[in-house]
Image 1 (cartoon, helix red, strand yellow):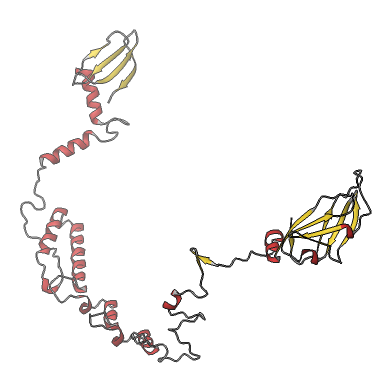
Image 2 (image 1 turned 135 degrees about the vertical axis):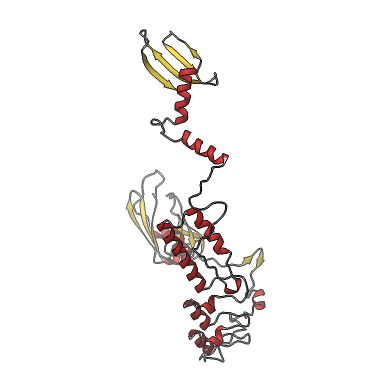
Length: 350
């Protein structure tokens, strides 16, 4: 058991028995010995011993009985009477409160670091500019912080005046030698002015005027398509013709809706499909979903009809007849027939 150093404690001792094993009920505090770390002594003068029940006694120990850290033992020294010793481990107050009462935390002090004694002041702190008092030597504290002298560093840190200029977006503070945009340039971009959008080389960057011309040309083409004057095929050629009028010096493109006679074809001219185009059309028709019936395409129907009309037959007269496809291998049709020759069921193999 644990006991808190220099703290009174009440606990039960016994039973105290005589030589015949009978419980003693009249023992006195003077018969108790207190042994501290092997040194035998008497109880504190303020400690008491009172019989409680059947040879068990209530021992009220004064704080003096627990004034020494370590093991404390309470035993009986009374002729032929006997009592089992009661032992305590006396620990510091904060240890007892942390381990038993749960009202404190164990105190932990670092005395070594990586096997070496921790110095009072780590040597490497000095290289960081921190002195033994915990002050940073390279920083000077002032009572009053003025606008420029305390905030400006030798590396050109911004002063309140500079920050004020930035806040008002002054051109002189925004412009740099590399051509960083000024407030006036930003305002020109916001208004979509041609001067701000146009480039100074022949890269063809569209200006707002050029964008308006493109929009006007597209609108004219839409009107021509709606009126039947311009058809889809010619619109593509018109765009191609319009692109040929590109003028790099104007940084823009203008499309025209006028249509000369284009070769090889123009509106109303017949046009023949290429072989691959004809094949694509035929395939689309043959494989059109639900083209004949639900889940039956035109290709499926033709295969079934061909098998029934011109395919090999097996099982004739047996009630189950199978019809091969034109490849003479694949079953295309299974017909179930009754004795009268009536078809009672059909399975299509697509």
